[in-house]
Image 1 (cartoon, rainbow, N blue to C red):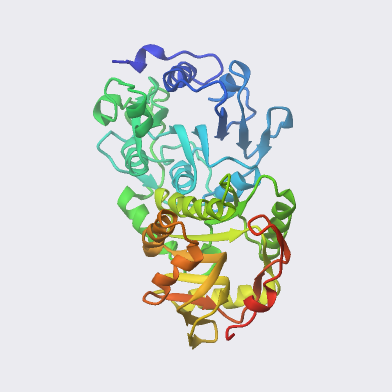
Image 2 (spheres, rainbow, N blue to C red; image 1 turned 30 degrees about the vertical axis):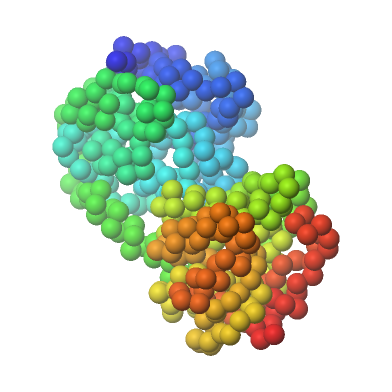
Length: 448
């Protein structure tokens, strides 16, 4: 039984966080060749923060961000962080989906930024400031304000209970709160189980909570909020978030993965240029390969993308192959926006495909399809992700192409195709067919 209270040590951190961090890393026992990467924001100038010990003592790499400081020598970037831009910033700085440690201390919107991060990214360890002036049974979060900064009162952040509810919902366990009552530590529950790590009082909020010991205000914390501003609960935030994230306009389209082979940097350049035309920010998915059947590697990659969407509870996923080409970006965006505003009961929206079956015109934005080939670009709605994932897995079991097997779903479910057709598979050399492929005519005609 490991008692983390015995491990607190201060070298570069504000309090005893350094000792806890090092102990957790020792317990997780990363291999020599495994990724060793951290992200910390709210790091000030980087001299006193939770990850400096990883950089200087363990020689890890990572990203620091702060609203007022920049130092490229330690990869500290000056960025003002909000829940709206945090995913874009992670993508801007090429943060891997799975990394080792995340530390958050921005004094106000910590909960909201963490909530956004966990929809896409999976750090092993999370360190997050909590508002310890709220007792362990209190579920309290500040009302979101993207421009807010801490005003010196106890109106900031979120209570430990609120953070724990969020972390638990994404498969993390509370393992420690520092003795001063500032930072809470969470670790992926599955890692604790896999590595047989037994931490005293793990996920027991009553025993791990620490009262604030840094001021003379509420419960030993900061002074009482002058304006007695309202807090909201975890459930209220989640409900508001669901309502705001209904995929009814392009601005809500965030979960974009493009599949790219490491051996095709030319295609990576191409697809990133295409996404830039649309003002979309995509995340590269490192294409999986098969030693004999290239098409099977393609199927494995698409299956893994859907699995990622399911694991991260995404409310949609846009999957692109790296040879997708948008011939008329302005018209495409106009039609996609109209479609999302008008339609809510669709399952899959094909953005680029070779329609070979009958179709039904729904309106000026789409047709309902029953037999469409190619997986160049498609958008999947939340409720349909598990079903399409199962279909892809079946196709792998049967050693058939996924864009043939998914025809079984198209004939009975709500599969749509965006019109007019303006997205194609770029004419280029195919690693699957080992020759230059030109499907332009097929992909620009609904009726064959």
